Picture 1 (tube, rainbow over the protein chains, first blue to last red):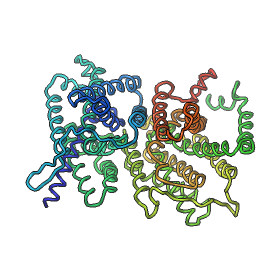
Picture 2: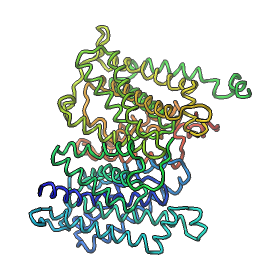
Picture 3: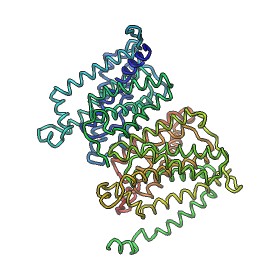
Length: 290
Length: 339
């Protein structure tokens, strides 16, 4: 029993990392209807930025983290401004292909600049395991989970109550009306991309300190997409619960059936959600069926 | 009425040269192995195999407007099917047919959950297939022999063994020609026109009596079947099948070929396949001009390639969505319509 509880807690903790990535996903999808296929690569590059600051330039965490966040914000803004905005109004396949191409470019850059070996981030999260009663949780995962929850909570508060948050939600609801109310739609697109870039970096850094850093960290995108689909593409709050569900499922399957099945899981889950409930658990907008 | 008379009249200008160009191309293609050395024949065979795969992806992406990010997985399904059957001693024609059918069925299976829903789901489903395929190929050791892959025996037809590059070239050539002819004729038939109609406006197509879901599924599966044939030929040609040949980066490769050549154009598929097959070679030659010993940079070149492919997708979508065909058309001073 204690073992299952332990696995569930580990699952919830690792699921929170996917949830933060998924939140960036949903944010972009809600505001501009673009499905960001380069999200996994944005997570990976963000973690590499921190690695560069701390290991290559030898900065302290407090100097390297803001720089890494700044760099990924600039990257996300650049992607929105130079890759996507010229193509606004084109069919969504074109957007996906551009982002798929951008993802390949980011993977290529990571491989050329930092190589293919799995790197270790410096210990920014304590490694010492945490005990809750008899239950043992790896330290990086525990503190990473707390960080993710803090970011999640902070973001939800910001999104609900701040002026900008209201503007984003207005844009997501109805672009034309929002524009009539004096909201700068293009500014909002740019802003949501920057926010998503920051969220991706946070998730990428925690993910890399748990699992190690390599260009293939971007492959976590499939887990993130599974979370997004399960949450229903349009639900920001739902990503946390969906993340926990996916995380627990992955951990349990990984423990009882082995790692191969664990990597197979998100894939089955994605197909299952599509067949059984295409709008996910919390999706509000009805999916358009043919 | 007017459209019919227009197409009946001989078009003035460059179109008059078309038969001559085709004849010249035909002679060149048939005589190629006797002109070129082994290396050139090898590259030409690779190009022909890629032509088949790119035509298939272009049917799905260019003509039917469906997005597939997992084309390499369909090639992989075909390649493994062919390798397993050849090892079991099944005759060559049956093997290739079986590879096409298997990939077709996989296309139906994985298109099914996605084509009913509008939006990004097909792209996600194909990406999932891409990752899923890799894990199955790598972990199901009993059948796929894991990372070591399968050694394909030499293919033979009625006692004629395909054991030289030249013979393999002439094995692949008919398939490539057939793929192009079948591909361009498809769009003169009801089914092919239904693909284009669904791409342009699915509601309108439905009103005109096209079964939208079935048409989408068929377009997706036909593209997969082309990939299956290309995969089978690849298994016969390289004599080796392993999971690393069908990574995501290979799917990026084929998508780039379609976009670089030109969406919705047969000529574009051929141009894209030629350009993309030669690009890594040019990269290698370029690198060996800078560094004397390339062997230390193999990993670097692989990533540089992926970066370059991604960059080409982005550049062509921004600069000329019609690809090389569009650029050639512009240079020729006339506009070619796709479809």
